[in-house]
Length: 600
Ligand SMILES: [Zn+2]
Image 1 (cartoon, rainbow, N blue to C red):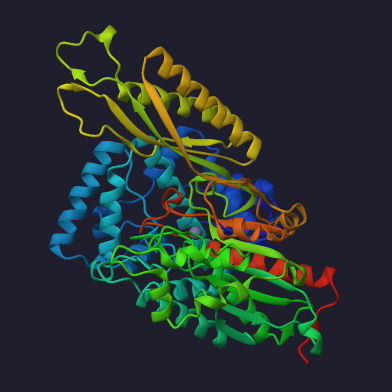
Image 2 (cartoon, rainbow, N blue to C red):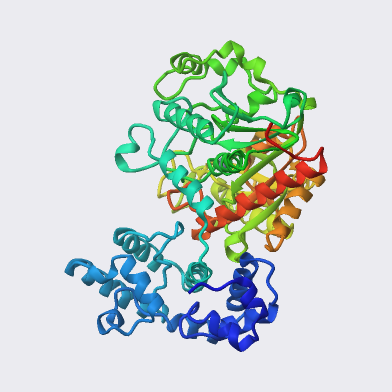
């Protein structure tokens, strides 16, 4: 029997606790505390209240909650001692039918894990799609997480406890994220294409204009056609462009909302980076089309062909072309196989000469919005599914060299050294401290080497990189200025020299306040708390920012929000929320403009 949110809201607390019994293993206190936040405007709000009750519990309560869980494929499953919910989940995952080898492996993992952490390993075995992880995936996840640090793993277990409760709650109210699942499955289908050398290893790599890349473009185009877009084409730079016309005969004169993200990937990347921001608006158009509904503006969804800069040195080829940032000299760049970009385009049937013509006229656009996986740990740690992006960080990058004196490691006294690597090391620690003093600044020495170094030689040269980012250009500049001043001071004190090469400087792209507000209204309407945050990573939106207002919505990532990694993932429940938010934004925009009308 399914229950409704209304029943939960109206029932006395004791009855509501009974209605929600079993969400948390042998721990009714979680539900009792969450119910203090009644009434709930949405299921998402109830889920957040439950997660909050867990996250605000004290350590003893958290440990008791974790210890109330059974081991995976443990003794309880054999003795038939599991709760009905656990039994269902473990048997769906196939854990009731393990081979002797799998049982032996799980037994060892369980024992080692308990010994290390003092609580059982907890994994939402139904997974981010809700349809069950395979035994192979479960064992791989178990092995990976066994290597975590204790404090982190405690939190990761609690997040899994909340995920298990989310899935159980979905069952109780008889609701499932069907649109989120639809997008999830579309992303899985897209991920079947991968470049040679990676495909064989089961890794996802799709770089600009390879066969896999063109297969992705064709699939995205077909998905757009199947979803009811009025026109779909692949443009001169390889972007997939779909347009869903505004209502009435005047759609040519109507303004256009631009949205989208990229479908290329880094090497051995994740399935959701970029692609999520293409499939979420596609499914929104599909739903509008199914409802025979048109809005007073055109919706243009672009699958950007290139953002990651993997095959050629140039990046943002797709979104850059839309703002007139495509440089003709890039066509002569060569990939590692010596194939020029021009040749790759010719092979793909693209007309490089026409790239200039795809530059957009901002006057015909309302603005640009982009949905993207967060690619960081913030939303995951806060247990908040969606994030409002306030700004895409401005960045500055340098390549540096410090020159000291290479000398004998045995004979040079400590007070007579001119050690280039120690100077760089001192600067690295300063950057770490200085960036942390700001809110939301980051500074990284990502490359660090002693060319020709030897075990018995004081380093005479040290090469390193600097990458500094902040939500505001002035904040970035202040950070960079302090770091370079410190570099100067360190070099003088240590009697070493340095050279600097500025290799990149990108301005911060602040979200347009009205567009940010559109996202906030949408997220608030879902009953999900607002969390505003800058984007540490660059996105297509920062290119489009050059010609029109933009704002982004982040979707929580799993596994600490890891990205540019095969572990990257969202959940279909979170995807569904981003679809709901996007639809809300569309309909709201439709109402603030001329009234939305049924299809002619
Ligand atoms: Zn991306």
